[in-house]
Image 1: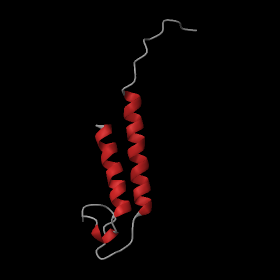
Image 2: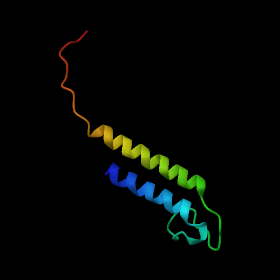
Image 3: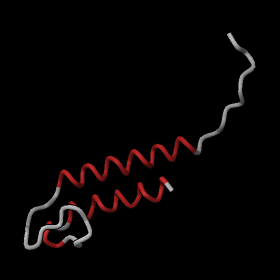
Image 4: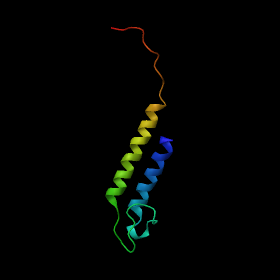
Length: 72
């Protein structure tokens, strides 16, 4: 689940960087009809959150360490 959302957010970041606000679909935050402004900060935020979710998913799939009986 985290992997899918992470990839979707990275794709959204590319859309924010590539398309002006007027060309974004109306359901995407930042849509402004007729605007030529690119949402660079929205793209950076979406990219960083997507990357964080991918890293989180990667750590969740790591090997499990057996519980240690050595209580110090």
